[in-house]
Length: 120
Length: 108
Image 1: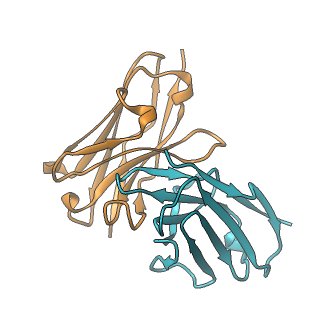
Image 2 (image 1 turned 180 degrees about the vertical axis):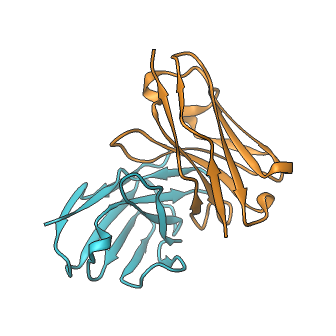
Image 3 (image 1 turned 90 degrees about the vertical axis):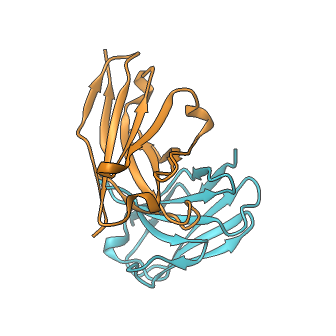
């Protein structure tokens, strides 16, 4: 069965960086894009960007350009999302999600979420 | 960027009610729209893709319609398990996604 398993909760200070991992299993990792979506407590969903695990190509939301980097390690079927220059407003649950049909057919499998807390 | 506006933001309904949620795009997105259901503390679940295609395993009481800039999600007969928050999401040709603000369906 398809699974996306994310790394554990993180606590970071303002100005630091965080790197969240997303390990895929149950399907061919390089055949589907990985998207990252975040959700602050009590708020809606915010799309951050996508990465094609086959080519390494990425596409980021304008809001996060210059601050987010999405990478992968195909040998262990794992995607990574690194967010730098953290501020308190980045406190949120971060999800990875598989994009079907280059996202055109929706995000069909999601990780369990990783809580990132930014606090001094 | 394409903006997605959902209405209402909160909806109170009873079991058995027919429920309709609307999502409007700031410009035409053809049929590139998905709907998700999210329950507290859980990841979103894909319900509908390409505006009206039902995801495998999703009950047939859920349906989607629309194209261009106006879309609807309909639950034909609300069940206890359906009380949740629903989000629309658009996809454009540059693989950029945007979510709507969400609609919380509450028990009346």
